[in-house]
Amino acid sequence: RMMKRQIQCRSDLGRLNAPFLAIYESLIPAEEEKAKQKQLLTLLERLVCTEWPKARLYLYGSCANSFGVSKSDIDVCLAIEDMDVNKSEIILRLADIFQSDNLQNVQALTRARVPIVKLMDPVTGLSCDICINNILAVVNTKLLRDYALIDARLRQLAFIVKHWAKSRGVNETYQGTLSSYAYVIMCIHFLQQRRPAILPCLQEMETTFSATVEGVECAFFDQVEKLRDFGSCNNETMSQLVWAFFNYWAYHHDYANSVISIRTRNIISKQGKDWTRRIGNDRHLICIEDPFQVSHDLGRVVDKYSIKVLREEFERAADIMQYDPNPCGKLFEPY
Ligand code: GTP
Ligand code: MG
Image (cartoon, rainbow, N blue to C red; front, side, top):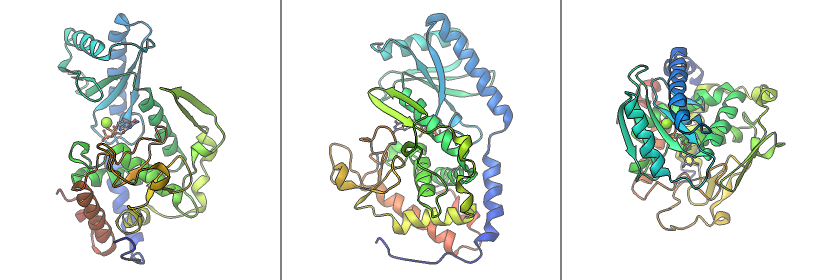
C-alpha cells in the first residue's frame, strides 16, 4: 500500500490558503479565556497552599502548550516535593477541599491510570482536571510550546489536524485512535522533515534547559527567540502543508518499519527499538516516539481495528485535499 501513489499536488492549492487560515483563526481562544484560566489557577493555588504550603500548581496540556482551541478544559498538575506521597489519598483530600469551597461536579478518580480530581468552577465556567506530580507532562508541554514559538505554521497546521481528528472521531485514545499530544508530535516531526526544514530539532542542539524527571533526562535548546527566522528559507503555505501532511500519512509513511521521532532529525527503525512485534498491549502498528520517555510509543493505543480506521481517514483526507473543489467543507465533516 505504501507508495501506492506518487502524485503531484493540485495546482490551485494557493487559493485554499485563505479558507484554512480562516478556520485556524476561528479556533484560537479569545484573550478573555486566558484570563479566566489564570483566575481559576489562582483560586486553586490559594486552596491547595493552605493544606500543602510547599506545593505548586502548573498548567500543562493544551491550555499551556499553545495548541489549545477555544473552550478547552484545563489540565493542572499539583507538584508535591515528597515523592512517596500516596496519590489516591491526596486526590481524595483535594476533592474534599474543593467540595467545601463550592466548586461543582467534584469527582475523585483514584483508580484511573493517571489518578485525577475533576471539577467545574461556576465563576469562570471552566472545567479542570488535576493530577499529582506528573512533571514529565509539564516538561513536554514546555517543549511543544517552545516549538510553536519558532514558526507560526506549526500552530496553524496542528490546529487544522486536531480539528480534523476531533471532527472525524480519530482523537479518542480509549477507542484506539491517537491523542492530541500524538498529533502535535506528528506535526512537529513533519515540519522538521520539510526541505528546507521549517523546524529544527531542539533536543539535538546545545542544552539551555534541562530537568531530570523520574530518572529521565530532559534537555533541549529553549532560547527559541533566537530561532525566529529558522524556517524562512521555506515558503510553503498552510494549504500546501496540510496537503503534504495527509499525503505523507496516507501514502508515504512506512508503517511496517519506521518510527517517527522529534528527538532526532531522522526517522528511526522499529527494529532498532524492538518495536516490531506486539509486547503486552503495545502493538506498535503506528510508531510515534515520546520525546523524553523514549521507550514510550504514543501509538501504543492503536490496535488492529483502529489502525485501519486511522489509515482510511488519512487517505480520505489526502484524497479530499487532492481532488475536492471545496476541501475545507468535506475535510471536517462529522463522521
Ligand atoms: P486537547 O485537550 O485535546 O485539546 O489536547 P491536549 O494538548 O490537552 O492533549 P492531551 O489531552 O492528549 O494531553 C494532555 C497533556 O498530557 C499533553 O500535553 C502531554 O503533556 C501529556 N500527555 C498526554 N499523553 C501523554 C503520553 O502518552 N505520554 C506523556 N508523557 N505525556 C502525555
Ligand atoms: Mg487536554
